[in-house]
Length: 237
Image (cartoon, rainbow, N blue to C red; front, side):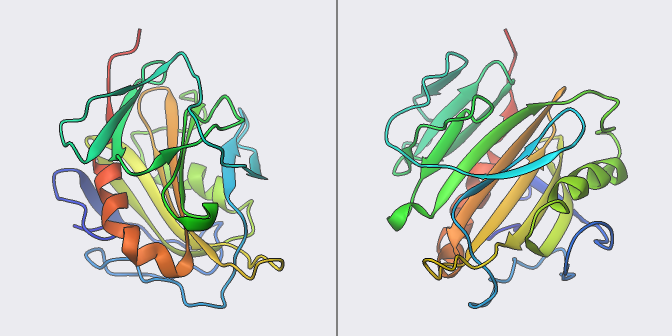
């Protein structure tokens, strides 16, 4: 089944969930259909991050993408099984993923962001990976309803237009997915869309935010699905 474009059945299982609570303008879609690209003229903004504190606070902040690596001692890049992809590991958080070797690493300014990648012209097309420690008291990850309530609280605190959301299982990890557009940037006239995955390894929330200019989304959708389907847990030190 495809989430963005062409994710395989082995990597991601989908379960459509009603989206009536705590989000704006949700459009229901059949579970087997690909996400529709938002039409031009909806809304845009420069790259943003959605963060969560111990009490589910939300912050959307600008990020400057620069060349080089993050320098984190807890992460590593290894030789990929697929030569077109690079394997990335965050041993402290206990997860790994793979991404296309043509995507360029940036230097995030946030210690909770172990990976920032740029894959398009103009610095707008990016993948940001954020890791947030969570306690069992904050969210019961065995319950899709609890996960939805937790992630809805994050998304509802932002000025975005949610177009689709659904519960997922990614390599046996519970997850929740949102596809939304951002407010139009008055300076550039750019409309950005986010394909946003909240994944829950034990004691962590790993958020993958794929950002593109609205007209670029379909071009990168299949690659997004490949990256998401590669996410899995690894032993922690």
